[in-house]
Structures are given as structure tokens and as C-alpha cells.
Image 1 (tube, rainbow, N blue to C red):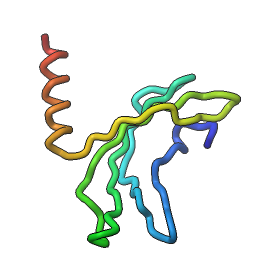
Image 2: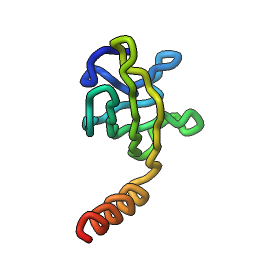
Image 3: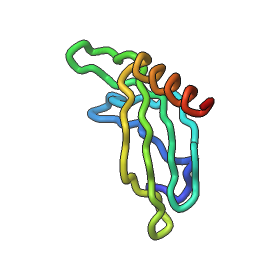
Image 4: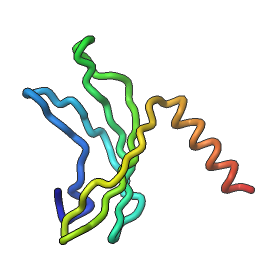
Amino acid sequence: MTANAEDLTVEYTEEGIVTIKELDKVILSKGAWCTILFKIQTWDRAKEAYAPMSYTIRRYQKRSGEYQQRSRFNISSNEQAKKIVDTLSRWIAE
């Protein structure tokens, strides 16, 4: 892992293929615990192409000076992401 939240990534290469392609990221919080929202595409081996965009939220804990992933939540589609955004927007407005 890494000591800097800015250096954390979910991009992953296996057998020369980038199986998780990181398109963008936003650090939502940082400190002893760090939360990052990533925009990604995953490699579909069967189709030999990247799947549509999806999103993942990762939580990291800093221990012994290094961030270690502790949890994750995957948002599998734009439709699911929109529902989350709409619900949070409504709750915040209440």
C-alpha cells in the first residue's frame, strides 16, 4: 500500500491486461480513515472488452504509516448511481 491517500488506486493488471481501469477518483475524506470514490471499467474476459462504467467506494485505514483497504462498496451501473444520488439529494434537502 501507500502512505499518501493521493497515491491509492484500484487499477489492477493481470497477465498484461488492465482488468480494472481507473478512470477518475475523488477523495471524500482523509486522515486515519480515508474514503475514496473511484470511476472504473472492468475487463470482461468473455467479450474481450471493457464493461460499461461503474463506481466503487473504498475505505482505507492508516496503520503503521500505510493505508490498508478495509471495506468497499461497488455501484454496478449508472442507474444505481443515479438512484443513490437522487435519494441522498432528497434526504439532504429535508
